[in-house]
Image (cartoon, rainbow, N blue to C red):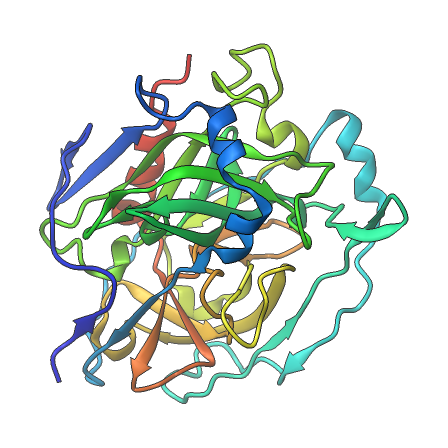
Length: 365
């Protein structure tokens, strides 16, 4: 059976592009004249529009033939950073045992046997004004809900703070081959049944990802970054004189290269499609299920039954210690139907590190 991709079609974009190998790095600026200001973007997202936003996820159908083995480079990592200042005191909270589901994780490297064992729960939330309404501790506070518009449709995904004034998400949450770049992009870290009042809300300044030329339709390239405005709605890295997102949330570490087979993962995000409602963060834990599953090279899978809306949420290695982002919720299989499996790009130098370098090099006055 030949592969069929839903939501994506082959196309090429060259907005602010830089050629690299067979792929093309692309970016766009959302603060250009004639586009909405940050204040207008925030005003656009009324409670009604947020509630009606459609969860976005990629679903594909393909061969059950194993794909070719992918070369992996040396392991390279960089640490994260907890928030400092007034918000740091919130980290005194502990996370009690959550409500778990699924079954215990399998032994690492036990591939090709779906369904893959996993555990899943909703993390504890802290008190605010007498109600349980926000995620107070690092690294939970780095993960949030992402609202955006593509074409004339409003969508929701997930994202995380991975470097100063830079968010990690999936490419399909910021760029579509059919409708182009996302607009009205706003990030709510620690979202919990509404905006997290402690962690604010953050508009996008620039978007950076891979184009769809060459082999770009492959989900190995489903990685994207979002440069955020400062708290005041302009500038970045504090250039406006107002605070940055990471000063409230801290940021995750990152990891690429090496063999993912020996790792276990904590996936985080905001699944909204049934049976979830998108109001609260969900956390899943599993060892690696398969590498290059069903002839989709450069990707790997884990046991994880999250649905649409979780796209772009991070896969962490060493949750609670190193907190290395080493994948994102990217796509699910519909033929064969595998609702209890999630797939991610395999972060390597070509698809992750090169894009991160490019995104960090975007102008930030």
